[in-house]
Amino acid sequence: MKKILVIITVLMLLVGCTNTKETKQVQADAAKFKEEYESLNNESNNGKTYRSLEIDDNNPITYQTVSDIIEAMDDKESFVIYFGFAECPWCRSVVPTLIEVANDLGISNIYYVDVKEIRDTLELDDEGNIVTKKEGTEDYYKLLEKLDSVLETYLLTDADGNDVNTGEKRIYAPNIISVIDGEAKYLTDGISSSQTDAYMDLTDEMKEESYDKIKCSIECVADNQKTCSAKTKC
Image (cartoon, rainbow, N blue to C red):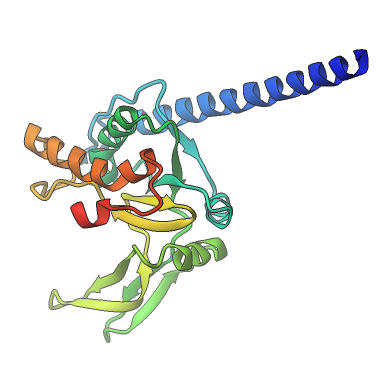
């Protein structure tokens, strides 16, 4: 009997240590995200000024690698991913609303992948040919395949202002994706259709539209739905 009690006690201590470690990591990620995004408040960028953000100390953002996301999808998990980077002005327009929606829906974790350095970059040369300026990482291309069903086409613009299809998909910033049972079900950028400039002041109407777009796209994760009906509602 004593041996059983000792084993149970040890197991409880191990679980407690694991939970404490996970909690500390969540708190560290939240603090890192807050510092990373707020550090650019009111900084100049190409003659414009970055939007000033106030990120909640207890925000639900957790940093993930691309391989982490792939593994979670292979494990049939359900979660929300936010793709972006701190210097992205459009991302800074929706991040506070994403956090607000997650809190309102009771979503405790938003997976975050910084896409700035992992993506490929394509461009058109003087003859209009598509050339690769920068290769993406190996895992990035794997993730494109995983998320193919919801991703948008990678388009370039030629000298005449026409769209040129590169023949591949792209993870843009911001992209907010709902994954249900390991499958990508819905994507939104969360940006109001009335917002025409990444640096402009946001009206209450813009913020409301952004809130509705994000809520509609991720509420299936909060409700733990097997299928994401948001795709037909949004």
